Length: 316
Image (spheres, rainbow, N blue to C red):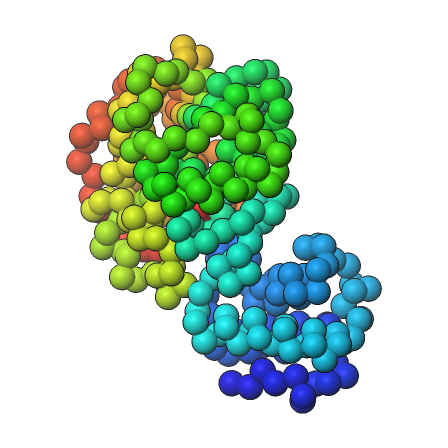
Protein backbone atom coordinates (compact mmCIF):
# COMPACT_ATOMS: atom_id res chain seq x y z
CA UNK A 1 0.00 0.00 0.00
CA UNK A 2 1.34 3.39 -0.97
CA UNK A 3 0.37 6.55 0.84
CA UNK A 4 3.08 8.74 -0.64
CA UNK A 5 1.82 12.23 -1.33
CA UNK A 6 4.43 12.83 -4.00
CA UNK A 7 1.92 11.18 -6.33
CA UNK A 8 -0.69 13.78 -5.38
CA UNK A 9 1.35 16.89 -4.70
CA UNK A 10 -1.39 19.19 -6.02
CA UNK A 11 -4.41 17.29 -4.77
CA UNK A 12 -7.19 19.01 -2.89
CA UNK A 13 -8.25 17.89 0.55
CA UNK A 14 -11.31 16.27 -1.02
CA UNK A 15 -9.04 14.21 -3.26
CA UNK A 16 -6.86 13.22 -0.30
CA UNK A 17 -9.94 12.19 1.71
CA UNK A 18 -11.16 9.98 -1.14
CA UNK A 19 -7.71 8.44 -1.58
CA UNK A 20 -7.35 7.81 2.15
CA UNK A 21 -10.82 6.27 2.38
CA UNK A 22 -10.06 3.95 -0.53
CA UNK A 23 -6.77 2.90 1.06
CA UNK A 24 -8.45 2.08 4.37
CA UNK A 25 -11.24 0.15 2.70
CA UNK A 26 -8.74 -1.81 0.62
CA UNK A 27 -6.81 -2.67 3.78
CA UNK A 28 -9.96 -4.12 5.35
CA UNK A 29 -10.00 -1.85 8.38
CA UNK A 30 -12.88 -1.96 10.84
CA UNK A 31 -14.78 1.25 11.61
CA UNK A 32 -16.76 1.57 14.82
CA UNK A 33 -14.64 3.57 17.24
CA UNK A 34 -16.22 6.95 16.69
CA UNK A 35 -16.86 6.64 12.95
CA UNK A 36 -19.03 4.40 10.82
CA UNK A 37 -17.13 4.36 7.53
CA UNK A 38 -13.77 5.02 5.86
CA UNK A 39 -14.84 8.42 4.51
CA UNK A 40 -15.72 9.69 8.00
CA UNK A 41 -12.44 8.34 9.34
CA UNK A 42 -10.47 10.14 6.62
CA UNK A 43 -12.31 13.37 7.44
CA UNK A 44 -11.43 12.93 11.11
CA UNK A 45 -7.74 12.59 10.22
CA UNK A 46 -8.00 15.74 8.10
CA UNK A 47 -9.76 17.72 10.82
CA UNK A 48 -7.17 16.73 13.42
CA UNK A 49 -4.04 17.30 11.32
CA UNK A 50 -5.25 20.55 9.73
CA UNK A 51 -6.92 21.89 12.91
CA UNK A 52 -10.35 22.09 11.30
CA UNK A 53 -13.70 21.85 13.07
CA UNK A 54 -14.89 18.21 13.16
CA UNK A 55 -17.87 19.08 10.97
CA UNK A 56 -15.93 21.20 8.46
CA UNK A 57 -17.87 22.19 5.34
CA UNK A 58 -17.38 21.38 1.65
CA UNK A 59 -15.52 24.63 1.08
CA UNK A 60 -12.65 23.36 3.22
CA UNK A 61 -12.46 20.26 1.05
CA UNK A 62 -11.26 22.42 -1.83
CA UNK A 63 -8.16 23.52 0.10
CA UNK A 64 -4.79 22.20 -1.07
CA UNK A 65 -2.72 20.99 1.89
CA UNK A 66 0.92 22.04 1.95
CA UNK A 67 3.70 19.51 1.45
CA UNK A 68 4.22 19.36 5.24
CA UNK A 69 0.49 18.94 5.88
CA UNK A 70 0.21 16.20 3.27
CA UNK A 71 3.10 14.40 4.88
CA UNK A 72 1.40 14.52 8.28
CA UNK A 73 -1.92 13.41 6.82
CA UNK A 74 -0.30 10.40 5.20
CA UNK A 75 1.70 9.62 8.31
CA UNK A 76 -1.48 9.15 10.34
CA UNK A 77 -3.09 7.18 7.52
CA UNK A 78 -0.08 4.86 7.33
CA UNK A 79 -0.19 4.27 11.10
CA UNK A 80 -3.91 3.51 11.01
CA UNK A 81 -3.43 0.89 8.31
CA UNK A 82 -0.27 -0.76 9.60
CA UNK A 83 -1.15 -0.87 13.32
CA UNK A 84 -4.94 -1.26 13.01
CA UNK A 85 -5.23 0.78 16.19
CA UNK A 86 -8.43 2.76 16.57
CA UNK A 87 -7.83 6.24 15.20
CA UNK A 88 -8.73 7.79 18.55
CA UNK A 89 -5.66 6.16 20.11
CA UNK A 90 -3.39 7.41 17.33
CA UNK A 91 -4.72 10.96 17.68
CA UNK A 92 -5.11 10.86 21.46
CA UNK A 93 -8.61 12.25 21.20
CA UNK A 94 -12.23 11.29 20.67
CA UNK A 95 -15.52 13.15 20.41
CA UNK A 96 -18.58 12.42 22.54
CA UNK A 97 -21.77 14.44 23.04
CA UNK A 98 -20.23 17.28 21.03
CA UNK A 99 -17.14 17.49 23.25
CA UNK A 100 -13.51 16.57 22.72
CA UNK A 101 -11.97 14.05 25.11
CA UNK A 102 -8.44 12.84 25.72
CA UNK A 103 -8.14 9.06 25.37
CA UNK A 104 -5.38 6.53 25.95
CA UNK A 105 -5.27 2.76 25.72
CA UNK A 106 -6.15 2.68 29.43
CA UNK A 107 -9.75 3.42 28.44
CA UNK A 108 -12.24 2.40 25.80
CA UNK A 109 -12.77 4.78 22.92
CA UNK A 110 -15.97 6.80 23.62
CA UNK A 111 -18.74 5.79 21.18
CA UNK A 112 -21.86 5.08 23.23
CA UNK A 113 -25.41 5.91 22.06
CA UNK A 114 -25.89 7.20 25.60
CA UNK A 115 -24.39 10.43 24.24
CA UNK A 116 -27.75 11.20 22.64
CA UNK A 117 -29.45 11.00 26.06
CA UNK A 118 -26.69 12.98 27.72
CA UNK A 119 -27.38 15.88 25.35
CA UNK A 120 -31.14 15.52 24.98
CA UNK A 121 -32.11 14.63 28.54
CA UNK A 122 -34.17 11.91 30.16
CA UNK A 123 -37.68 13.30 30.22
CA UNK A 124 -40.21 12.08 31.18
CA UNK A 125 -38.30 9.91 33.65
CA UNK A 126 -35.92 12.50 35.10
CA UNK A 127 -35.55 16.26 34.78
CA UNK A 128 -31.82 16.80 34.46
CA UNK A 129 -32.23 20.53 35.07
CA UNK A 130 -32.85 19.71 38.75
CA UNK A 131 -29.99 19.18 41.26
CA UNK A 132 -30.13 15.40 41.02
CA UNK A 133 -27.48 13.04 42.36
CA UNK A 134 -25.93 10.93 39.58
CA UNK A 135 -23.59 7.95 39.70
CA UNK A 136 -21.71 6.69 36.67
CA UNK A 137 -20.29 3.18 37.09
CA UNK A 138 -17.30 2.31 34.90
CA UNK A 139 -16.52 5.87 33.85
CA UNK A 140 -13.39 5.06 31.81
CA UNK A 141 -12.33 8.29 30.12
CA UNK A 142 -15.01 10.14 32.07
CA UNK A 143 -16.89 11.07 28.91
CA UNK A 144 -20.41 10.35 30.18
CA UNK A 145 -19.94 11.99 33.58
CA UNK A 146 -18.11 14.99 32.13
CA UNK A 147 -20.66 15.50 29.35
CA UNK A 148 -23.54 15.29 31.84
CA UNK A 149 -21.86 17.94 33.97
CA UNK A 150 -21.21 20.12 30.92
CA UNK A 151 -24.73 19.94 29.49
CA UNK A 152 -26.63 19.89 32.81
CA UNK A 153 -24.90 22.18 35.34
CA UNK A 154 -27.31 21.45 38.21
CA UNK A 155 -26.38 17.77 38.46
CA UNK A 156 -24.18 16.48 41.27
CA UNK A 157 -22.16 13.60 39.85
CA UNK A 158 -19.94 10.84 41.17
CA UNK A 159 -18.03 8.60 38.75
CA UNK A 160 -16.30 5.35 39.65
CA UNK A 161 -14.05 2.87 37.91
CA UNK A 162 -11.99 -0.12 38.97
CA UNK A 163 -8.95 1.26 37.10
CA UNK A 164 -6.89 4.09 38.57
CA UNK A 165 -5.24 4.59 35.19
CA UNK A 166 -8.67 5.22 33.64
CA UNK A 167 -9.57 7.62 36.45
CA UNK A 168 -6.37 9.58 35.77
CA UNK A 169 -7.53 10.09 32.18
CA UNK A 170 -11.02 11.00 33.41
CA UNK A 171 -9.55 13.57 35.78
CA UNK A 172 -7.67 15.22 32.91
CA UNK A 173 -10.88 15.44 30.89
CA UNK A 174 -12.86 16.90 33.76
CA UNK A 175 -10.24 19.60 34.25
CA UNK A 176 -10.01 20.39 30.53
CA UNK A 177 -13.78 20.87 30.36
CA UNK A 178 -13.91 22.90 33.56
CA UNK A 179 -16.26 20.54 35.42
CA UNK A 180 -13.87 18.91 37.89
CA UNK A 181 -15.53 20.71 40.78
CA UNK A 182 -18.88 19.05 40.01
CA UNK A 183 -17.77 15.47 39.36
CA UNK A 184 -16.17 13.34 42.06
CA UNK A 185 -13.95 10.42 41.04
CA UNK A 186 -13.41 7.29 43.09
CA UNK A 187 -11.95 3.82 42.67
CA UNK A 188 -14.77 1.32 43.13
CA UNK A 189 -15.71 -2.09 41.80
CA UNK A 190 -19.33 -1.28 40.89
CA UNK A 191 -20.91 -0.20 44.22
CA UNK A 192 -18.30 -1.68 46.58
CA UNK A 193 -16.75 1.60 47.80
CA UNK A 194 -19.95 3.63 47.95
CA UNK A 195 -21.37 2.64 51.32
CA UNK A 196 -25.06 3.51 51.60
CA UNK A 197 -24.99 6.46 49.18
CA UNK A 198 -28.14 6.83 47.08
CA UNK A 199 -28.62 8.43 43.68
CA UNK A 200 -31.44 9.64 41.46
CA UNK A 201 -29.70 8.20 38.39
CA UNK A 202 -27.23 5.34 38.09
CA UNK A 203 -25.87 5.24 34.56
CA UNK A 204 -23.41 2.74 33.15
CA UNK A 205 -21.89 1.45 29.94
CA UNK A 206 -20.29 -1.62 31.51
CA UNK A 207 -18.38 -4.49 29.90
CA UNK A 208 -20.89 -6.70 28.08
CA UNK A 209 -19.06 -8.88 25.54
CA UNK A 210 -19.51 -12.62 26.21
CA UNK A 211 -16.15 -14.27 26.79
CA UNK A 212 -16.76 -16.65 23.89
CA UNK A 213 -17.13 -13.70 21.51
CA UNK A 214 -13.89 -11.95 22.44
CA UNK A 215 -11.79 -13.90 19.94
CA UNK A 216 -14.18 -12.92 17.13
CA UNK A 217 -13.76 -9.19 17.61
CA UNK A 218 -12.08 -7.17 14.83
CA UNK A 219 -8.41 -6.48 15.45
CA UNK A 220 -9.12 -2.86 16.39
CA UNK A 221 -10.83 -4.02 19.60
CA UNK A 222 -7.73 -5.93 20.67
CA UNK A 223 -6.01 -2.60 21.37
CA UNK A 224 -8.62 -1.74 24.00
CA UNK A 225 -8.43 -2.99 27.62
CA UNK A 226 -9.94 -6.47 27.61
CA UNK A 227 -11.39 -6.12 31.11
CA UNK A 228 -13.47 -3.17 29.87
CA UNK A 229 -15.07 -5.42 27.22
CA UNK A 230 -15.41 -9.00 28.50
CA UNK A 231 -18.16 -9.81 31.01
CA UNK A 232 -18.54 -13.51 31.67
CA UNK A 233 -20.25 -16.28 29.69
CA UNK A 234 -23.38 -14.31 28.81
CA UNK A 235 -21.99 -10.76 28.84
CA UNK A 236 -24.01 -9.86 31.94
CA UNK A 237 -21.51 -10.31 34.79
CA UNK A 238 -21.41 -6.60 35.62
CA UNK A 239 -25.01 -5.91 34.56
CA UNK A 240 -26.22 -8.43 37.13
CA UNK A 241 -24.29 -6.62 39.86
CA UNK A 242 -25.62 -3.25 38.75
CA UNK A 243 -29.19 -4.52 39.00
CA UNK A 244 -28.64 -6.46 42.25
CA UNK A 245 -27.31 -3.39 44.06
CA UNK A 246 -29.62 -0.84 42.49
CA UNK A 247 -32.30 -0.95 45.18
CA UNK A 248 -29.70 -0.12 47.82
CA UNK A 249 -28.30 2.81 45.85
CA UNK A 250 -31.28 4.38 44.09
CA UNK A 251 -33.52 7.01 45.65
CA UNK A 252 -37.23 6.05 45.82
CA UNK A 253 -37.85 7.68 42.42
CA UNK A 254 -34.42 6.87 40.99
CA UNK A 255 -33.69 4.95 37.80
CA UNK A 256 -30.96 2.68 36.49
CA UNK A 257 -29.84 3.33 32.90
CA UNK A 258 -27.57 0.69 31.37
CA UNK A 259 -26.16 0.00 27.92
CA UNK A 260 -25.81 -3.70 27.16
CA UNK A 261 -25.04 -3.65 23.44
CA UNK A 262 -24.70 -7.10 21.97
CA UNK A 263 -25.84 -8.66 25.25
CA UNK A 264 -29.30 -7.11 24.76
CA UNK A 265 -30.97 -10.45 23.99
CA UNK A 266 -29.55 -11.99 27.15
CA UNK A 267 -30.49 -8.91 29.17
CA UNK A 268 -34.03 -9.04 27.83
CA UNK A 269 -34.32 -12.57 29.20
CA UNK A 270 -32.97 -11.43 32.56
CA UNK A 271 -35.48 -8.55 32.64
CA UNK A 272 -38.42 -10.51 31.22
CA UNK A 273 -40.51 -10.26 34.41
CA UNK A 274 -40.04 -6.50 34.79
CA UNK A 275 -41.35 -3.38 33.12
CA UNK A 276 -37.91 -2.40 31.87
CA UNK A 277 -37.99 0.21 29.13
CA UNK A 278 -35.80 -0.33 26.06
CA UNK A 279 -34.90 3.06 24.64
CA UNK A 280 -34.83 4.04 20.98
CA UNK A 281 -32.33 6.48 19.48
CA UNK A 282 -32.81 9.03 16.74
CA UNK A 283 -29.15 8.92 15.69
CA UNK A 284 -28.58 5.17 15.81
CA UNK A 285 -27.70 2.72 18.53
CA UNK A 286 -29.63 0.23 20.62
CA UNK A 287 -29.33 -2.09 23.58
CA UNK A 288 -30.02 0.44 26.36
CA UNK A 289 -32.58 -0.23 29.10
CA UNK A 290 -34.07 1.89 31.87
CA UNK A 291 -35.28 0.29 35.09
CA UNK A 292 -36.78 1.87 38.19
CA UNK A 293 -36.04 0.83 41.76
CA UNK A 294 -39.06 -1.48 42.02
CA UNK A 295 -38.15 -3.10 38.72
CA UNK A 296 -34.61 -3.78 39.91
CA UNK A 297 -35.95 -5.42 43.06
CA UNK A 298 -38.06 -7.75 40.92
CA UNK A 299 -35.08 -9.15 39.02
CA UNK A 300 -33.46 -12.42 40.03
CA UNK A 301 -29.77 -11.63 39.29
CA UNK A 302 -28.92 -15.33 39.44
CA UNK A 303 -31.29 -16.26 36.66
CA UNK A 304 -29.54 -18.51 34.14
CA UNK A 305 -29.26 -17.15 30.61
CA UNK A 306 -28.21 -19.03 27.51
CA UNK A 307 -24.81 -17.60 26.41
CA UNK A 308 -24.95 -15.47 23.29
CA UNK A 309 -22.42 -14.84 20.56
CA UNK A 310 -21.69 -12.15 18.00
CA UNK A 311 -19.81 -8.88 17.86
CA UNK A 312 -22.48 -6.31 17.00
CA UNK A 313 -23.04 -3.03 18.81
CA UNK A 314 -19.89 -2.99 20.88
CA UNK A 315 -20.10 0.55 22.16
CA UNK A 316 -18.53 2.70 24.94
